[in-house]
Length: 148
Image 1 (cartoon, rainbow, N blue to C red):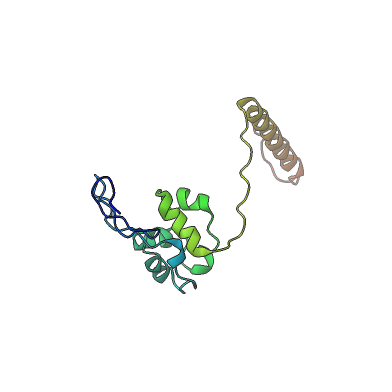
Image 2 (cartoon, rainbow, N blue to C red; image 1 turned 60 degrees about the horizontal axis):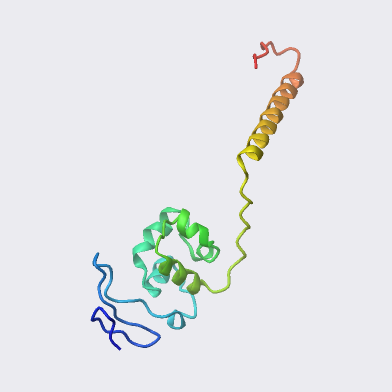
């Protein structure tokens, strides 16, 4: 098959595409069904096996230096911590890891009024804790009471 832009495409496991205008890749990684069945023992070997070696340093410098930790990565961490912005790369990473723990639910968004109430409550709680700590100090400790 031919791509409208003139590049050659092949069946489900597309192996070549036209280079994008910005020069990004002329080869596409293997489809998910050709990803390794068993995970390699090291991060380096794993990123090589999924053809994403450019992320090796990202994993190491962000606390993902061993495969035990990598196996537990959440999709949100791929974007926010590891700065892997390409959706296809994130998908390939997750697919290569197989079944993983469920990701935590994100808290519902607070509207500004609710947030203001929560902050006021937090400030009140902090003030109460300060008061309690001051009252619990031994009487022999001569400290002046801080003004609020």
